[in-house]
Length: 161
Image (spheres, rainbow, N blue to C red):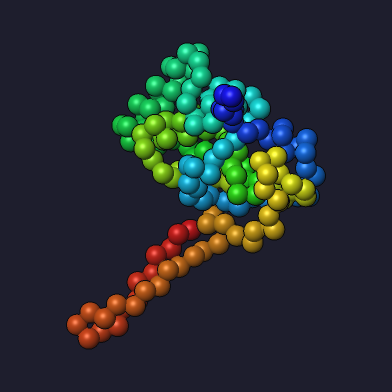
């Protein structure tokens, strides 16, 4: 017996219907693995399949413009995501994510908001414990490494904020 494979993106409406939103917070700008982005906003979720391939020709021109911009190195805004459990949903940037995946990127820079929910998530995962509320934007992080150069100890600090 053949079964139809699920090809739709998950939607935030599925979370809102099945779970109780306990709170939300901004997690700031982060690097997110594209494989973890599995959902879209209600308005765009039907325009892309679960691999973020465009489903119709009506979005072709915008997709090609975004692809051209990425390939030419034009600065595009970071995508905006909502994280629920370990899954990310797109609120702005469906085309940028689609193009990034098509170009073989593994990660993308995103402004992330976290939803804390109570209950089992629609994709079969229990809601996770809240993540510490830190962000690259709000806190100054320094990576300090020691190097021994010509017998001298040098300290190198890279600020990410």
